[in-house]
Image 1 (cartoon, one colour):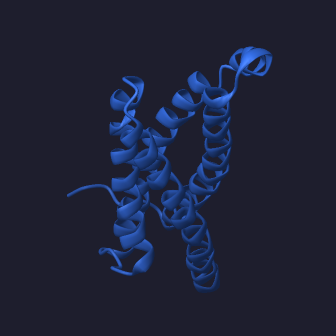
Image 2 (cartoon, rainbow, N blue to C red):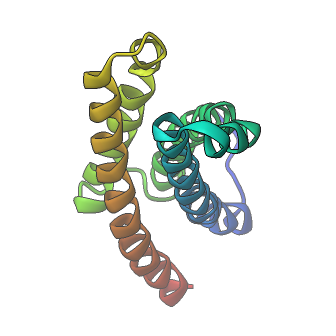
Length: 156
């Protein structure tokens, strides 16, 4: 027989996923800003380009993207795990389905990196499209997530 988590621990676990995801939403907006700066650097010329290169936007965008990939996948799995621990089942609702879709999208987006590094414009365009779709879904998820947290707080 496995040990049972206390009611208090189960309750507080409910808030790990939403807090993490709100932090990741902010980081996603920052990653989008960095990505736009990378594009701006790529298109700049002369002194402007030299100044933009100093910002190392490409490296920072890649690093933030890697962190986002790891934490978003972990956060999605963690959110499902906590839901299962507390309820004995997952609730197949739009929030869960969109979250699973987002997890797939970020994996596809990251998988395009080697192609972009080799200069493939199709990969760059696809990466941008996927990430702006991801950002839109993330914003929607934030709203539906707050509604879920409100239901949890009402039950308490």
